[in-house]
Length: 120
Image (tube, rainbow, N blue to C red; front, side, top):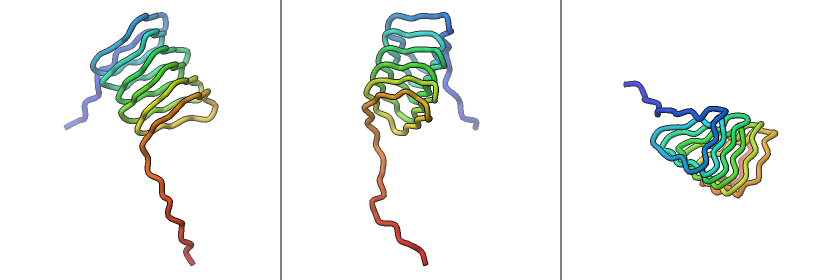
């Protein structure tokens, strides 16, 4: 049985939404949203796109601008072209060199505090 990908909606580069965007599935933002996003699937914010408001999604990939708090169930990728600001909670976070980042980040992770033993 093949894995099903969530349905993806696209907000085009000339589209500007004022208000909250919610729904099942995913969203690819190429335009602008002023008001926030709440999804059950993945969200991508493309280069030149912007979201101003809070974000909730399964995964998040930012190449544009996100200004607001974010709760992401799984992985966040902040691309080198991105500008991000806010308080975020995510299971995994990847930040590429060159990204403009001003975040308070809350993430669960394990630290190995045991001293490393040298092999002879």
